[in-house]
Image (cartoon, rainbow, N blue to C red; front, side):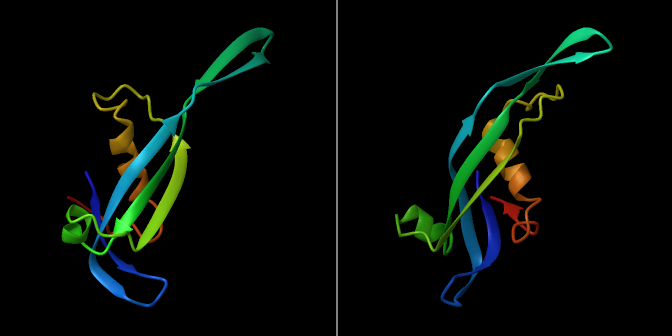
Length: 108
C-alpha cells in the first residue's frame, strides 16, 4: 500500500507523483475507569501512532533512493465491527487521506 500525491520539497522541487509509504506503526491499549450513575465503567481505546516516508516517485522508492520528506500521525483505532477494522496499516492510510497535503492522495 502507498499513496501518490503532489509534493513540494523543502527545496521547492515539485514531485508530481510522490510516493508516500507508512514505514512503522504502534498501537497501545488504553483502559480508563470511571463511575457513571453509580456504576463502574471501563472504557478501552487503542491509540495508533505512525510514521512514513515520501519518495520523489514510485521508481525512486523501488530503487532504494533517499526519501524527499516524511510524515507522522496519530488517531484512535476504529473498532466499529467492519471486516477490515483491525487492519492498522490500512487505517493509517485512510487517516492520512484526511490530513492537509494528503487529501488528494490516490491509493497505489
